[in-house]
Length: 83
Image 1 (spheres, rainbow, N blue to C red):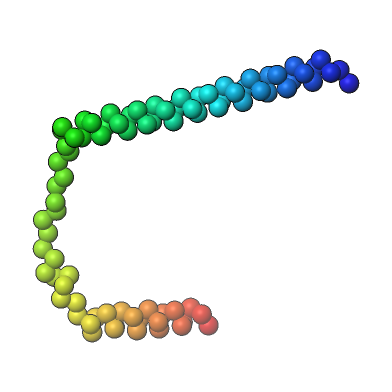
Image 2: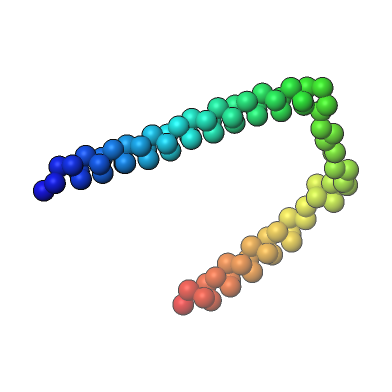
């Protein structure tokens, strides 16, 4: 077995892994920098948040008879499919 070829292979592997590791460190650092920049921008120019205006009066009055009927129909349909 040629040891020179093995040494070259290990060197190339370590160079590749080092390059990927360095890239990941730079990417994580830039993400932190971006986070601080966006916090600074949002401090002076906050984004407007719209609050939805809807009528929830209908959802508050639930007819329990309709709910019970829907549950009974679902149980009946399921029992038909099980057999």
